[in-house]
Image (cartoon, rainbow, N blue to C red; front, side):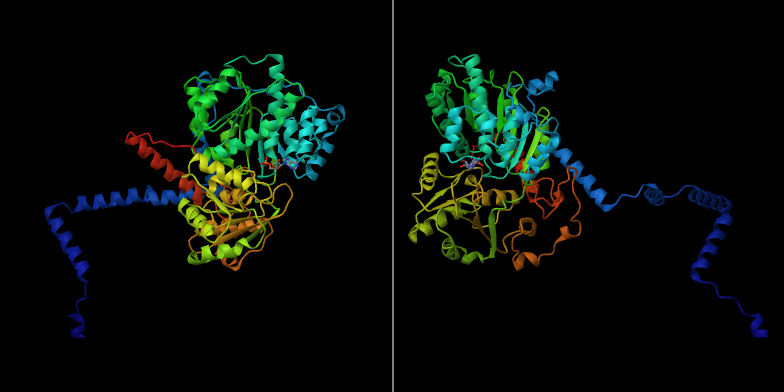
Length: 588
Ligand code: AMP
């Protein structure tokens, strides 16, 4: 018991220290003040929640947004930010606040039986021809050239070229343009889209010339802007083919001009001096001619941007905007492209008046007439395997690679092996490029090795086989490349070499494209870990699956390799300006 009485309860060190401290404070007479302070702090803490608590409270109060909605919202903002800077209007129109609200009338009307077609009948034709349209007051589709009221020499020429039945883009695109409406045409390469903008332009120029002939130094009535010299030349040649029979049949002479770099400007100026009706141009030389006042667009009322997505990708937007500055009045504006991601549609919307979108085949989808084969080939085995691959089909064959050095290496290798090959890339001079294209087109050479310069818009008839020596980083380029074969209903083969050098995003895009075109998926692609499988159903603001920027189906816009590339290019360009060099950007 005694022992128990002496028992002193153990007090932990911390508690003892606290008591000691309190004693000291008490002695100094501050103990009470200190506790008051503590109490006050405690009270405030109880009534005023911390920022952390507040944040979680706010989160709880916010309406529930699903992950899908969040992604769509984010992507919408990204796209808006991208297109804000890029409105396609002239400075004059912007400054004066000029906007056009009504399309330009042309006086063209389809025959009565076409005009009398009901909406249901029109929709049925569109459905049969797989044409998707969007816009108000869409002119009816027309199933033959005769009902489009082209003059006899044009119809004869079409027949002579073996063109008897219009293709889907022509069935709907021609009536739209002939009616004077602005249009966004989305059609895969080889669908016959060149005629869709060339024929109405010839008609319009003819009409203007008959009403008020062009005098020396005046013109043009119509302008076509192309992203590459080769494409411009090809379009120019198509125009020439139709102008000659028209002149022979007694119609007034229309003078076309090919306005591209790499050609002596004096010969171009001679044509301008006589008065020019139709100009096919690349942006650089056109801008130059306009800035030097060698030519004007005072009378121009018809503008086509061919391969518009590529014009924007190549950084020609500012040049095009400068060209827009030279227009003195409203024009009919047409935008054509094989792929048309949302960003281009937004870009276009500012320049077009009540546009009609004519889409034949999903934007970005590969041509369904092409058998697409994808093979895993090790880097060092590629060049040897190429020879084997060339045996798959008879010539002509196109081989694409990303960089110029590879083009030169392959070209040399093929020549050594006795293959009749020619090559083009941006590093070769204009003469060499033109010779190569002409020789290949004429069938004198069996193989053309090229960088993407040649992949866009060029029309090589009857290409049997396209070989992608490497897979382009951007899926759009793949679509353009393989679009060189399988044209106008014929079947072609595209073989693509892939290996570890390609990024996963690129391969995923390819996988989805193959899936969409119902092609065989090689095991390497099938095995890929695919994040898009989880959010397959997410569509962006315009209902497009996959990336809203480049149209690739294997990724979303935030992972877009093309956007990434563009951003780094923009940064590099800014740097150039910073150092005062301005940077010379030649047309490709
Ligand atoms: P494009 O898509 O304009 O580059 O045209 C591709 C090729 O198709 C050109 O060689 C045209 O001559 C040809 N073509 C255009 N329209 C038709 C048609 N309605 N029928 C058959 N071939 C056509």
